[in-house]
Length: 402
Image: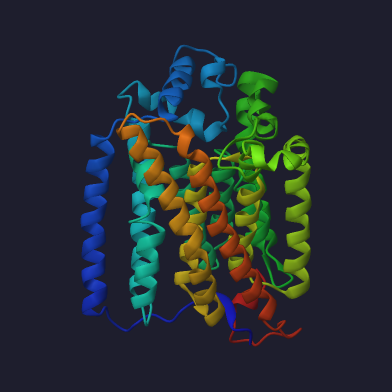
C-alpha cells in the first residue's frame, strides 16, 4: 500500500481534552470572525460588487456593467443581487456564513483525528490565523471566500465518497469563478480510477447554471468565461514581477510573451500534470492540491484572494491518512505562510494610508521564494513515492472506483 492515501484517518473513540479546547476556541473564533467582518469596512472588490448588483436590480444586463465594475463572475454571483435590496452587506453575510459553517465542519474533522496535535497547529496556520483568510475573506468580503466554502464542503463530501454531491458543489464553485474547474477533473481521478458520477453531476450543474442565464441575457451571459484569459497581468504574478524589475530587462520579452499565451501555458501545464497523475497513480487529494497550486503559480493574474481556496483544500491533508499527506501538508506551509504575509502587508499599508506599489516587488519576490520552496518539497515527496500496485489493497478505500 502506498504511504500517501486519501482515505480518512481513523477517529479517536472520544474527544481528548485538547481537542475539546480546540473546538471551543474555534466556536469563539467564529463569533469573533463574524464581528470582525461587520466591523471592518468592505473594501477592495466589494464596492464593485455593489455596482454590479445595483445594475441587476435596475433591470440591467449583469455582464454589461461599467469598465470600473466589470463583472468577471458567473451566475452564482448574480444570484446574490436580490439580497442587496435588504441590506448592502447581506451578500457578504451569506458568503461568510457558508464559509464559517464549512470551516467549523473542517475543524471538527481535524479535531477527531487520532494524533491530532500537529494537525491542529497546521490547520490554525492554514485557515483561522491566516492573514489571507482574515483580510481578503472576512474583512474585504471577496467572493473567493464563497468559492473556498463550496470547495471545502466538496472536499468533505469527496473524502466521504459522496461523488454526486461533490460534483454539484464543485459545479457551483465553477459558476462563481472559473479556476475551480481544474478541481472537477482532479477530484474525479484517483489512481487511474475515474468517478463518472462526479463528472456528470458537475457537468449538469454547470450546464444548467449557464443555460438559464443564457435564456435571459443571451450570449452576454457567457462573457465572464473569456474574462480570465483577456485580463492583464497584475500584482503578485511571477510574470508581472519580472516585467517590473529593470535588472531583468532581458526577460521582459519572454514574460510578455508568456502573458499573451498564458491560457495556453496553463492548459499545457495542467495537461502535463494530468499525465503525471495518471502514470504515477497519484491519489486525488495530493493531485488536486498540487494541480491547483500550479495553476495559481503560473496564472498571469496574481491576486492573493485566489489562494483562499487552496488553503482550505490543503486542510484535506490534515484529515486524510498517509505519511506522505503529512509531509505534503508540511511542504505546503511555506506558501500558506506566504499568503498570510502578503495579505497582512497589503492591508497594513492600506490602514496606514500608504501606497502598495513601493513594497509590491519585494513582497512578491518573498512570496515567490516561498512558493518555490513548496514546489521543490512537494516534487521531492511525490517523486520518492513508489508507484501503487496495479491491484491496490482492498483495505485502501482511496483506490476504489466510484
